[in-house]
Length: 234
Image 1 (cartoon, helix red, strand yellow):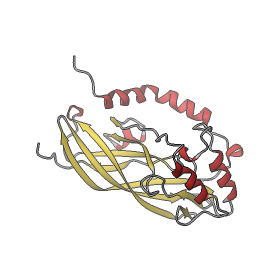
Image 2: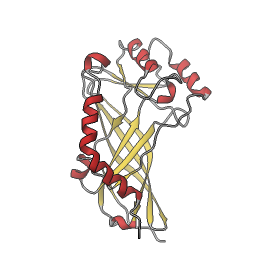
Image 3: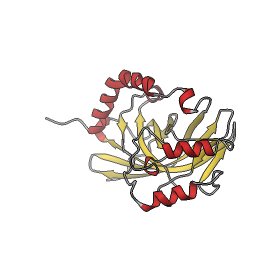
Image 4: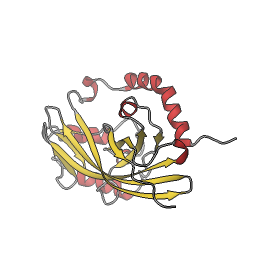
């Protein structure tokens, strides 16, 4: 018996657990009084600016370059760490999802999911060095970007999408993707801290509060339209 593709299995699992996920999120999101995050609002949009297609047996691999647009819709400046991977220029893409329609994307019903998890490398010397560089009274301009209220910031990232032939998605079809970014790496935190606590990040947030609010939370983009190119030759 033919086994369903792992992408479809994951998508179905997310659909069945959707309601439970919402409940868990509502229970675990900290209150404004406890985390100092009240009123902060960062919106993430994007557009696909480059596509490379590789044929691999019964699937197509799309290597995408996405131009992201961060918009600060709040009343205070937002401070972003510019990246920690690949010479401190890129964020970790926690996952990329693809949906058939804008409605499916908005409702969290993708047919493709590429989940990853942050690299576990807390003991590497680079994190100690990054903490040393960040431990200043103001956000270092070479490592951070401050987005003023109603201001925008653009940055390009790369991600990969794999679409299997039996998904029935035709070439030149418009699909919708979403990217989930880790803007503050768990690896920079002390080795004994868990994934939920960010003691070092929180200490910098307090220290830099006169300059703005340091973004410690990951961010999910709004749906990004992506027109599939023609199928490459085998």
